[in-house]
Length: 110
Length: 111
Image 1: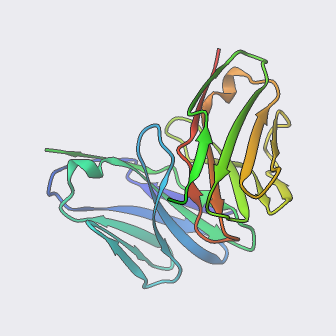
Image 2: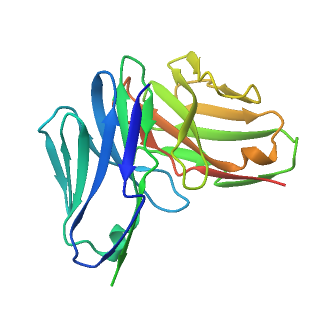
């Protein structure tokens, strides 16, 4: 059974304090790893898709990386508006379904 | 802008009273999904349509049903809502097995 584990569950940073969120996975045949941002009371917003080990994607202060066992979401010099829950999900096999982790709740304070 | 739209954003229903949530998309994607998300939990897939083919998850209660009358619209019917069905319901779309794009969600409250 595919498993996705995110850590930490919650993270509090001061503005400008860089850090990384972890997503470790145990799957049979990874076809894609996805990062989403979810604000309270809203649907997940797509950030990145990674397909193979060594791949990296960047968007503003966010950078996602992928190895054969885990993915990291690096946040450089975060701002309060980066506060949200960050969800990781994997796509495996031939079905169209995703398996989600439970997310990391990020709070960035002034 | 192409998007996924869910109506209503908030729905209050009574215990046992049927309720329908709706989702529409302008992305022209062939796959539409319904997820249930409870507080601080991961989204849980209920079912999805691959074109007109309906795919139900094994652990989705019979109380939940879905209809997809055309490519753009998909409905989630809860026949007899219980208190445990209070949650955020998320609709998502994708083109085959590519990236899923989510709507804003419908928050369901059961009294």
